[in-house]
Amino acid sequence: MRKGIHPEYMDCDVTCACGNKFTIRSNREKMTIDICNECHPFFTGSEKIVDATGRVDKFKKKYNLA
Image (cartoon, rainbow, N blue to C red; front, side, top):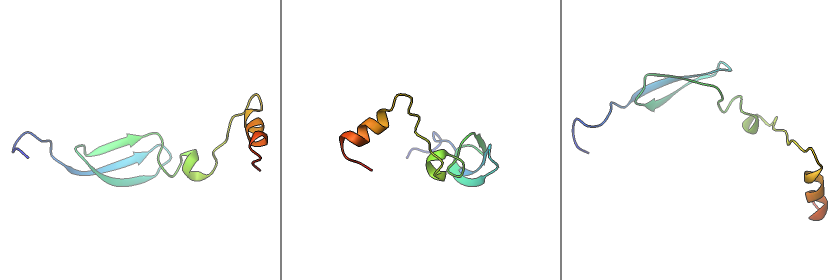
């Protein structure tokens, strides 16, 4: 790498809207985010499939999925 053209790489304190805090490496000192792995529905298991017209049930019936 060439000297003097790259930003400084340092520890970054990240704070989520849910209150979770963790540290990563970045060129910024602090970050605030809206969703993290502690509160995102995919990671917490509270993910809900929105099915307005019965398409999920139709798919499961078509391929014999329980």
